[in-house]
Image 1 (tube, rainbow, N blue to C red):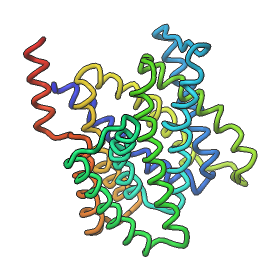
Image 2: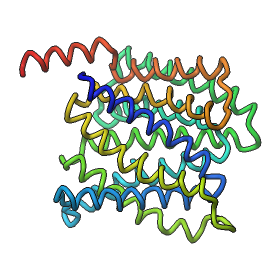
Image 3: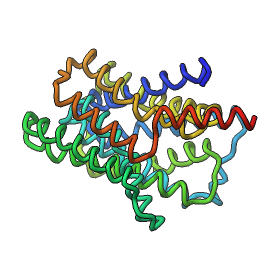
Length: 300
C-alpha cells in the first residue's frame, strides 16, 4: 500500500467514522426519516453530477430491480435504523456496532451458499457476540428507556449491510460506481413515503444541523463512495477491508472530542472483542494483506 492509498484509507475511515457523529447531531433535531431522506437525496444528486462529469450511465432500465434491492439493504434500511438508534445511543457505540457487519455477512453467506462455517469463523462469531454483550449490557443499563431497542436497531442495521454484501456477491456484475449512484436514487425513492408518516421538525433547524445534514449526504455518502471504490481499484477488496477496523477508532474519537462522550473500560473491551471477531469471521489479518500484496507484486 503506497502513501496515497494509505492517506485515502485514513481519510475514508475518518469520514465514515464521522457519519455517526453527524447522525447523533441531526437525528434528535429533525427526526430519523427527514435526516436519512436528505442524506441519500443529497448523495444521489452529488453522484449524478459526478456521473455527468465522467460520462457514466446507470442503465436503469436494465438494472432497476438490482438498484432497488441494493438501495434498500445497503442504504435506506440501515441508514434509517442507525438514525433511529442515534436518537438514544452514542456515536461511539454506533460506530463499534457497525463493525459487526462483516460478521453478519459471514453468517449469512454460509447459509446462502450452504457452506458450513469454519472453526475460525465460528470463533469470530462467538467473539463478536461477546463484544456486543459487553457493550450492549452495560450501555443499555446506562441509557434512558428504549436504549435496548436502540442497540437492537443498530445491530439490525449491521445485519442489513451483511445481507447487501451477500446479495452483491451473488448478483450480476454491475460497475461499482453505478451501484453507488443507482442505489442512492433507489434509496431516495424508497424513503420518500416515510416523510408523510413519521414526525417532522416543528421549526427550521439551525445552521449547525444543516451543516451536519449536508456533510452526512455529500461527504459521508457521495465523497466516501468515490474514495472507497478508488481504494478497491488501487489495492484490492481485501486490503480495503481495513476500513472496517478503523471506522470505530474515528467514531469513538469524534464522539469524545465533539460530543464529550466518555470512553469507559467496557467500550475498549467490547470494541476489541468485536474487531477481533470481525477479523476471525472474515479471515482478515495484517499477514493476509501482506501475502496478497506479495502475490500481486509477483504477478504484476
